[in-house]
Length: 120
Image (cartoon, rainbow, N blue to C red):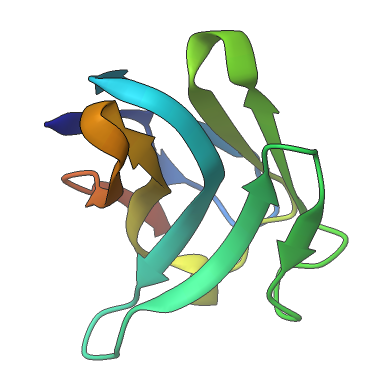
């Protein structure tokens, strides 16, 4: 099993900053990519940002220039720094990791989600 534990999130005023982190643990051989997705109220889950083991990143257009994803490969941890937050960033943020676990079995795991609320 591969477990993802998220931390951070909470309530912030518009224009403020917030960070979330996600640590992966379990029988991991390698993690190919880690990323953040979000699900706004009443909407479908969408990609926010993703980072590969080589450091390549991809962002949703709506967060480019405001959010930064980073990764600590040694700790199997991914971070998302969110700046200039807007009310439309309000959502449950989910961590995702995919790669290979012991016995060369691929995995694609999700965290439990952490709430981010941007409101005055």
